[in-house]
Length: 469
Image 1 (cartoon, rainbow, N blue to C red):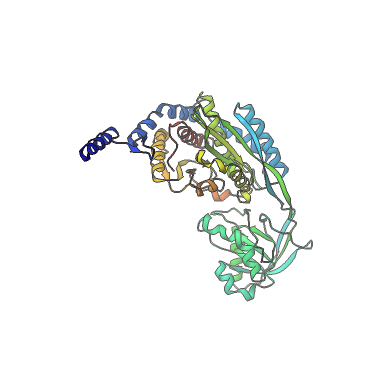
Image 2 (cartoon, rainbow, N blue to C red):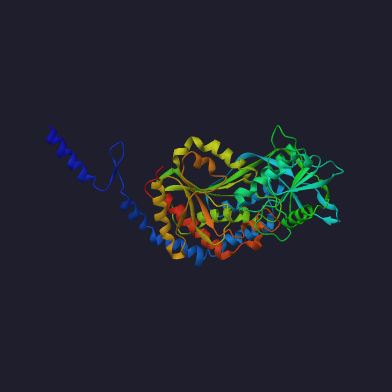
């Protein structure tokens, strides 16, 4: 009997040589099978690249974005401009012939900065350029006039806590990286309030400056007094730091008219190409439609939103229909912490097993360098093979991890995630500032980004098997 079992086992092993076995006994493809399947998309990938970079769709995502950004302008959560942007996109996606175009309602914060003004009174009269930070309270109507204390870090502030009481804290922290330095914007007001300051002015989170302040979100804490907070330019922060180190007394007058209103109704904007074989399974591509209320929101995140739209347009133009549903989501309320994306997640998470991959482009659409990816080692190997299809435009690298506020909820629960990687050397020159306009966008670079985004999303959506979890 033992010999018969061994013979049976050897036959079974021979039958499934080079293949894995599922728990139910059915065979999984070997990685060699998967490589061959992906290689079969070479011609389609080339057709997508040719259409996006050289063909009739050349510059389309750039031109669409230019019309949108010039027509609508900046799109702050809760604003009339954001309402207009959503209506514009709803109509545009329908006219493009995409399927299941619809709006999914969400509640978003509604904050307005109002009139802002700051001037240095001592040691000389100097106008200080400011941008109030999201959710900041206003100053009293007459403003705040106070002496300044300049610090380079939270540690220095704590050491000089007795000096800070009743003063305006100016942070002149060096830019190390966005992820590290942004903590001063997020927590600067809270840390200043803890030591009795009356307001905080934070050096803009920027790697380069031409006297332009940068805005962004900040967070109060329930058990800490709320004080007005704004960003100032790198130049003014450094000037006040030099003055302070010389022992010069600095006095600033600050006036801010910010208001916070009840949450507003807004929408995530959705469109699809419905899958031909597994329509219930989803490959999600996305960018966020909202922006701050300065510049045009062309870079953050108009580019990401519009190459995501372009991915569906290119696939439709080529007459392709992937096996899975390719779903475009244009998020709302990302700048306030991904509030629209969180509500989308809560609404759809019961179908989480049907989400093959979630993709978000929100780090610029400049010269692409590859794909950020989060997922299992097996899934990463598959994605690396897919990226090899982009050899004609020399964009094949896979980086770790994927990054995106709006897809983080899904990735946390094990869904593979991808984010576009591009050259961000100048990204933080313009980020959240008046400089975020169409002038920073490049049509050729957007073409390349669209090609990358489309090839990856289409191949994943059309492969026979979902990415391994």
